[in-house]
Length: 350
Ligand code: NAD
Ligand code: TYD
Image 1 (cartoon, rainbow, N blue to C red):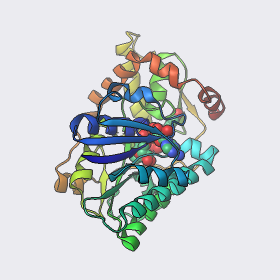
Image 2 (cartoon, rainbow, N blue to C red):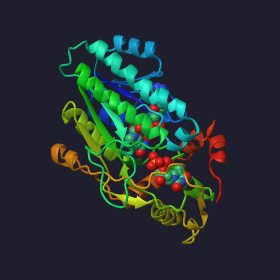
Image 3 (tube, rainbow, N blue to C red):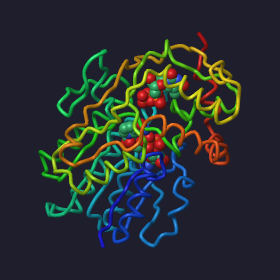
Image 4 (tube, rainbow, N blue to C red):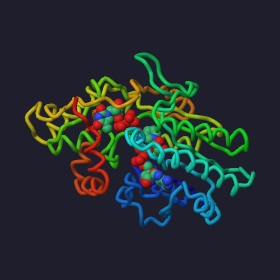
C-alpha cells in the first residue's frame, strides 16, 4: 500500500484532490496534513473522513521539527503539496504569513522528503501545486506557456514563484524527483468567500453590494475545481520528473462580464426580477498592482497526458451557485471568526 501525503487537504482545491484520491485509489493510504487556518475546514471532506484509507493530521508546515517527525513516522512515497496562503488581497495586507507558509513551509517539506528518501528516489515523487500568477500579467494578446518568464507582481505570486524556484533547485541540485503544475483561477464548491465568485454569490444572495475592483476589466481564465483535481491526478501518475505542466480552463472572462452572468443566473435561481442582482454591482477602489490578464496555454498537458476541461463555464457556474445556495450552513460556519472584520475593512467605494 502506497502512502501519499497531501498538504492543504482541508482547503478549497485540496479537499477535492483528497476526495478524488481517497475514492479512486482504495489501495493508497492518504494522509491529509493541514493547519486548519481560516481557509481550512474539515466540513469540506466530511464525506470521506471515515474511509479506511484516509487519515487527517493537524499541523503546520512551517514547523520544521513537526514536518521532519511526520516524515519519520510515515513512509510516504509521494507528496502532493497544496498547503499555502492563497489570497492576493490578504498578501497585500499581511505579506509575512505568505513568506512563512509558502516559502519556508515548502522548504521544510523538500528537506524532509530528501532526508527520508535519502537518495533512494525510486518510485518517489514530490508534486508542487502552483499558480499561473507567477508569470505576471499579460496584455491583450498571448498566453502563458511553461517557458514564459517568471514576473510575479503580488506578495502572493512572489511567494509562490519563490517556492517554484526552490522546488526546481531541489531537483537539479539534489536530484529530488519533482513535478510542478501552474494553474489558472479555480472556482466551484468549498471555495472560501473571500475569492471573487463565492463572495459575489454570497453577497447577491444577501442583497449586499458586489464589489468590482477598478473598472472590472481585468481578465481571468476560469477552471472548475474538479477539472483541476483530475489534472493533478494525471500529472501525479503520468507526469515526468523535472517537468512543469500548465493547467487552464481555455475560458477567459472579464470580471464585469463574469459578474453580469452570475447576476443573471442568480436572478433565475432566486426567482428575482431580471436586473435585481445586477443592481448590486458596485465599482470600488482597484487592488494595488492588479494584474490585468491571466490566460493559460495548456496544450502540453492536453497532448502529453490527454487532459481537457470537462465543463462549459455556464454549466460549472450554475452548478457552483446551486452548491452555495444548498449549503447555507457551510457558508455561515466559514463566515465566523476574523472574516467579517477583514471583509469590512477591505472595500472603499469609489
Ligand atoms: P485555500 O486557501 O483554500 O487552502 C489552503 C489550505 O492550506 C487550507 O486548508 C489551510 O488550512 C492550509 N494551510 C495554510 N497554511 C498552512 C500551514 N502553514 N501548514 C499547513 N496547512 C496550511 O487554497 P486553495 O485555493 O485551495 O489553493 C491550494 C493550492 O493551489 C495553493 O498552493 C495555491 O497557491 C494553488 N492554486 C490555487 C488556485 C486558485 O484559484 N485557488 C489556482 C492555482 C493554484
Ligand atoms: P480573486 O478571486 O481574488 O483571484 P486572483 O486575484 O487570484 O485572480 O480575484 C479574481 C479577480 O476578481 C481579480 O481580478 C480581482 C477581482 N475581484 C473583484 O473585482 N472584486 C472582489 O471582491 C474580489 C475578491 C476580486
